[in-house]
Structure formats: structure tokens, C-alpha cells
Length: 458
Ligand code: GAP
Image 1: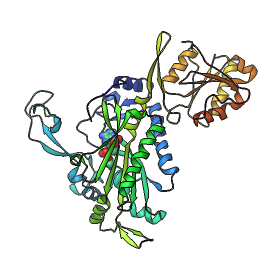
Image 2: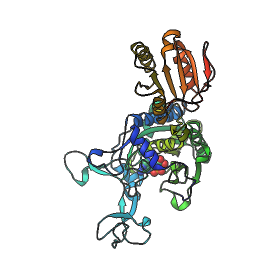
Image 3: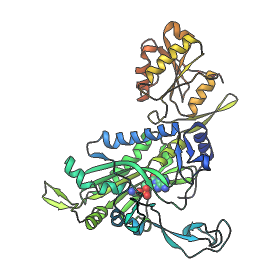
Image 4: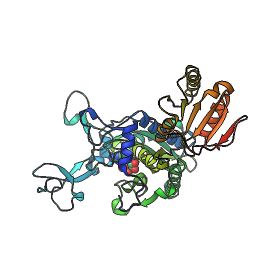
């Protein structure tokens, strides 16, 4: 993590909003929480699903050179010998001789325990993989690990995918799934936790074309964040120096985001060369080479790996979307989330709880929720209800008023501008779909009209 930062939003504000509105809770909170594990609440789970869906759509659905996979979390233990994780996935730790807390030795400035000032031991290597036992007997032979990255599930299935899909190089395999690391230094909310989710692509290419594909994926992945609303100035590329490269990487660049605590890694793009397929060939005894039918050559492909974190993406999207605007005598807190990421797409708000109005509003609600995640809210003033939706990033509110009973029209109110349009109820679904797809809010359907609200009732 590099020092510096024009800091725009406090992490405290993000944590508090997430807690207050049900995005993210500490894990097992009623027992005092479990360190650096988090539970995604009703809105958080929608945000996370939307991030994963957007990624999957971009890298699998809309491409014909990448296929998906969902490999198991526990893998044959030899996987981790081959991958180098048993030997190489370690942090040097020291232990305080008085309070027995452990610290990363490279995090200790003064050489003594930061908690009690006690003397610390010499550094010892500590493996970050979680270990457990498979089957009823707890013995060395039954040790298995929770995967620390999803990538290995892809490498061990390379031949299966080639044989069953007949994909030809260059092609990729994409996977989304949980990964586990017994991180020593955790913190910064969901930025670094011990259980997290990754979205990884392993893109197999002919050696010699790897540099070109490495550059291609950096651009693709940067653009993905920008298209989903992250401000370009809050993203930067950081090329790894030779000495910090992971044991498998020939080259690596991180896409860093300007988080509240400073610039930090959001996604890593690595050129893994032929390291993984060579290692798995060696340890499994199975040939993992590729036969190029055109040139009649056998070779081991090189791999370009764009590896993103779902949780870090969620944090970046939340931080980037967070905004506070002065509104009359209060502050309007809002999330400018991209519509495809917003947990709730539309809120249906009847102006009063009068029977006829509620019946119409419920009918509209039932119709819209067949298509999207929709909220129904009839509690408190309309202004307060708008604020509640702004705070969770709902792009559109549909308001049903008494006139709606007569003219069969409703109002759509847009989150960012607070502009409103009135339109026939029969046009609602189509218009909302167009707006959620990014079409101009102010292209009106027949019979619609538009106005700018100067002041919203609080
Ligand atoms: N297969 C390559 C790999 O796992 P990594 O840089 O260690 O590379 C990739 O991890 C991404 O996974 C990171 O950019 C980050 O988004 C996410 N990630 C890694 N460790 C994490 C942790 N402890 N908590 C949350 N996200 C994490």
C-alpha cells in the first residue's frame, strides 16, 4: 500500500452506512464478532451478486473465448505442493514473549511488541493456508487446505476443458469463488479479510504472444471498472518490482484504487508464464501440454491472469459512489451506484396509505418485481422515503398519487438529479428498462412530461 492521498470519504462513514442499512455486518456479531470475517446483509448480498453478474457477463457471456468453471474449494493436497503454496505462501512472524501476540516481522518498526512493548522472538515462517482434515481421522495423511486462490482449480482442469469444449488458443477459463487466507495483518473493513471472494480469469496463450495479451487484459480490466462508474482518477496502475513478484509471476501490474486509507490493490494482472502447467505436469504425471493443429507443435501455454476481489470491488464501488449533498437544512447522503450494481433498482412509493392508492401501488409493485429487485415503502413523508432510497443507491423511485387514480399516470424520480417525469403507467416498465439500460432519462414516452424539482419536501 503506498502512502499519500487526497482522502475523499472516511472509511467510518462507509462502515456506518453499511451497518445501518444492512449491507455488511461483522460476522457472528451476537458473539462479539469473528475477526476479519464479514456477513453481507440483504443489500450487500444484492450488490455482491450484481458485481459478480456484471463481471461474468463481460468476461464469459459476451465473449466467445472464455468459458466458466466452478471447482471445489478443497483440492488434492498435492495441488499446493505443485503450486508452491506449501513452501512459498508464508509470512515471517515474530511472537511476543509476554502477551504471545504474533506480528509480521516486516510490520514491526521498533522491534518490540506494539501491544505491550514486550520482547519478541526471532521471525519464523507461518503458512497462510487454512488447514483441516478430510474424513474421520485427524492425521497427517488426511490434511486438506482451504484454497487460498481459485486459480488452481482452473489449472488442474485445463485438459478437461480443452477436451470437452474443443477451445483453441488463445482462450480463457473464468471462475468466481471463495478463497481463504489466514492473514496476519487484516483490517480496513472488507479490504483484507480471512474469507473473501475472487473473480479470476486464467487466459491461456501461445508463448511469445503473452506480452500482447498482458497489455490487452490490463486495459480491459481498467475499462470494466470505469464503465461501471469508478472515476478514472481514482484508479492507477502499479507495476510490480522484480523483488515483490509472486513466486509464479514473470510480470505483474496491480490496478490500485484510491481507498479511504490510500492507494491499494483492487486487482492484480499477472503473467504467470508456464509455471503452473509445468508444475502440475510434474506433480501429477499428466501431460498438460497443448497441441496446435495448425503448426503441429506441442507446447505448454503461458497464462495471463486478471485476478479481482469481489469484496474489494464492492468496497471500491461503495467508496466511489458515496456522496453528501447539502439539501435544505440537512445533508442528502447518496450512493451514485451504476444502475446495474444498485441493490434495488426501483422503489414504489404510494403518496398515502389510502386503500385505493395502496391497491394501485401494490399492483405496480407486483408487476415490476417480476423483472427487478424492487422496494415498496409507504412509511413517513415522501421526502424521507426518497432519502432512504438515495442512501442505498436506488436509481429510480415511482410515486403514485391521487391523480394517478384518475389519469393512470405515475411519476418517476431520478436519484442523481432528483428530476421527475410523469408518464402513463402502461409505459412504466418499458421506460424504466430503457433508463436502467442507460438511455437518456429525458427521452419521454408518448404522453409524458418532465420537470425539475427545486426543493423536495423533507
Ligand atoms: N491468483 C492470484 C491471486 O490470488 P492476489 O493478488 O493474492 O492474487 C487477487 O489476489 C485479488 O484477490 C486481490 O487483488 C484482491 O482483490 C483479492 N484479495 C486477495 N487477498 C484478499 C484478502 N485477504 N481479502 C480480500 N480480498 C483479497
